[in-house]
Image (cartoon, rainbow, N blue to C red; front, side, top):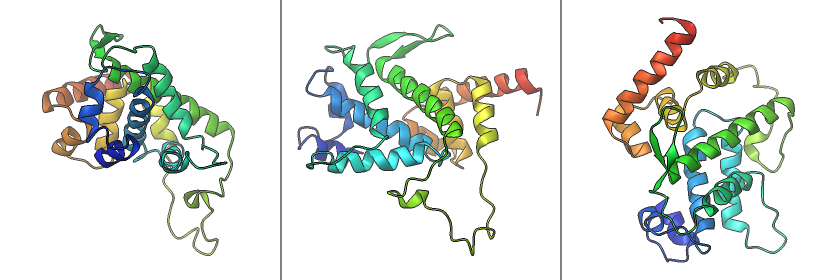
Length: 219
């Protein structure tokens, strides 16, 4: 991600730390929104091949080619625009300032609130995808499998997982933590991936477990 920040800012920022240390402004809000969208999609795409992975590929392509004449941006850039529009409300403030309180009364930053806004948008896009199935022939990952081999490997069905996470009504951070563990990460890897401490992870794991038990009983 650091190299992308440097490239897309034309060398103005060496890494994300420098970018997000500055107050939100008309000059940097677009880049901030794009980087937050990339990070959010990068985290979610590991388990959501149906929506997030396709949008991630599209957004990466957009960022590299959107300056070209007659280039048409993909649906993936909608996620970036969601982040940009959200952040634009806070011009003059930094993303690390307090946005407000969540449903539990815990203070959250503007940046975390932006992640949650993206998560809500992705949930909407998942519901839309369930109603409208189509194949995007501009993306190699969306092409159908070779009919000769299509029955050799069972394809993973994520619908039950999506239903479960929606029923649990997890916060964006809790969902990200759960996604990391579902992807086979150990705690140290989750800390590195999300940039949070072990105490935060353990607290969120207890919260997720409690919500599950309240809905479905002990497991």
